Image (cartoon, rainbow, N blue to C red; front, side):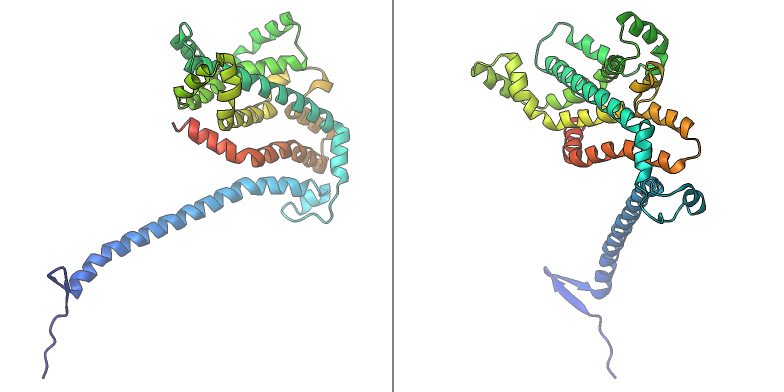
Amino acid sequence: MSTSAPTHTRRAGAVTTVGELSRRRAPRAGRRLGRRTARMALWVGLAALVVAVLYPLLWMVLSSFKDNQEVFGNPWGLPGELRWHNFAQAGSAGVVRYFVNSILVTSASILTTVLISAWAAYGLVRLRIPFGGAVLGLLLGGLMLAPTVALIPLFGLLQQLGIYDSYWALIVLYTAFRIPFTTFLIRAYMIDIPPSVDEAATLDGCSPTQTFWQIILPMSRPILVSAALLQALFAWNEFVFALVFISTGDLKTLPVGLMDMQSRLLTDWPVQFAGLTMAALPMIVLFLIGQRQFLRGLTDGIGK
């Protein structure tokens, strides 16, 4: 009658039993299972987030092709046909005019905010300006000022300047209230540009202005794109200033204009959804085009 002997394996001059090997492998297998479970939970959470973000947009787009009966009778279904005339009605109701107004105000505010902030950031980082620390503290203090608390003094100021109820009223306010944040954002990126770049430009005969325009700005393109996209999102969707400081109907921007259109159309919901789709489409396309530069600018700037 034979007796079973414990199985051994030799490794590096030591004798290890199969049971010991199993006990050592068990924690590793548990860790691998835990990592796989965490990875799967992460993917499930990201998928749920994608659905939560995209489905309302998809529902809005689909509803813009329906009629009132389908909107209320079959709100979650597909439209019976593509009713493009809803977009034509939304355009004739004023969306095109509001669209043009928003493009003008947003484009001008992007240009002024990004250029002024970039020049201010360059001065704070590279130039030895007097009281640079105090200026930076003043800019950061501007981040703490809520725009709504300044509505009354701004109303009188814009009237004294003669720009109340004009495009300039919104352009000036959108620029002024976004310069602190945009300057802080661009400054965080420019800090990590080596000073040797400016020194080499000086040796080549460049003035500080030439260095800024020809060297520093091209090198800061990712953060400039990020700042421009953030400014576009702010100016395109801003409501309070556009409501208070614009009274002429032909000068209203999209947020206020869509609210005014809703009060006129009342129960014509498909046309309202068409107007909302037209208002949301430019920002979606803009972010899709500039998403790579946007993410690179934020990660290189804020993360440094």
